[in-house]
Each structure stands twice: as C-alpha cells, then as structure tokens.
Image (tube, rainbow, N blue to C red; front, top):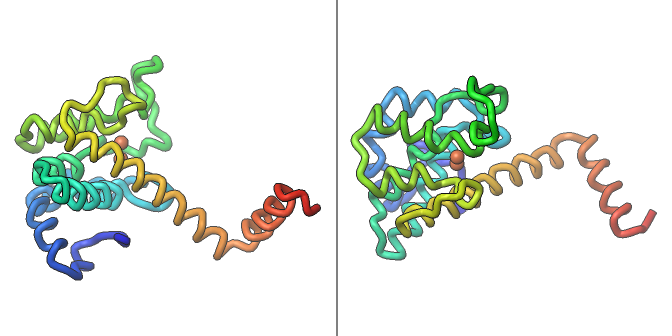
Length: 185
Ligand SMILES: [Fe+2]
Ligand SMILES: [Fe+2]
C-alpha cells in the first residue's frame, strides 16, 4: 500500500521510474503551489495528485497503456490552484460549482505552464467523470478517474480513522453509534 509519497520516501525502483516521469513537472513552481491547498482531509492537493499519479503509473504500466502520458496528466489533474473549501466562483450557476468547473480550470493552467499531448489533456479534463458528463476518450483517462476516486476515499478514510484514534470524543461517539445501530442500547 502506498503511503504519502514524497521524493524522500523513494524506497524501490518503481519509484525511481515514476519520479523520472514527473520530474520536470514537480520542479515547476506552479505545481509546487499545490502544496498550499488542502484537497481531502489533511492531504494537500500536491500529495493527492502524486498519489493519483502513482496509482495511475502502476495500473497503466500493468495494462500496457501509455503510462507516461497518463502519469503526467494525473500529476496535473487538480492544478486549479485555489482553496476549493472557501472558493466562490465569480460566475453563478450549477456548472460553475467546483466539482464541475475545476477540471477545465486545471486544464487551462496546465496548458499555460506545459505542453500537453491529447491523452494528458483528456486525463485532466475528464477526471471527474461520471460527475461531469463527458466520457473519457482514452483508457488512460478512465484509469485516472478510478485512481482519483480511490485516493480521495482513502485519504478521507484514514483521516477519519486517525480522528477515532486520537480524539476521545469521536471514539465515544463511534462506540455509542455502533451500539445504537446494532440495537444493543
Ligand atoms: Fe479533481
Ligand atoms: Fe483529484
């Protein structure tokens, strides 16, 4: 199971190839800015993108897909560069809610800072599918949609688990809720 990946935690050779693929991206100051924004629970946007990129790399390599484009796209998939928890869009309307609008913003930013191929662009633009309607054009993009959801779930789950272990009030609430659910009380 992959822990929070940083350049300091390179423990095996697959990490070496993985980092060689995204090396130029993570050196970029705009990509580094993602460290300033929380994505899910206590995971920064940068960590989240790296987790998604690493899962994507492993899966796409195993499936003989274009793992280089997929991994690079995944590393940039949430390059929207704002704190979505308190971000208010200037434009009103359903489609301007963060969940629907941020893939387009991330793609716009990524195109501004890097030269992207078609797969990388599709990965970024479609990563929220099926929340956003347009269907991924490439199998690589489909892998990223799953890696993204898996990472988000995992980040939130471990954060909640950590709360249960560290905060007594959550521990008691959990026990009480469990008893209540199983009708022991
Ligand atoms: Fe996203
Ligand atoms: Fe994401």
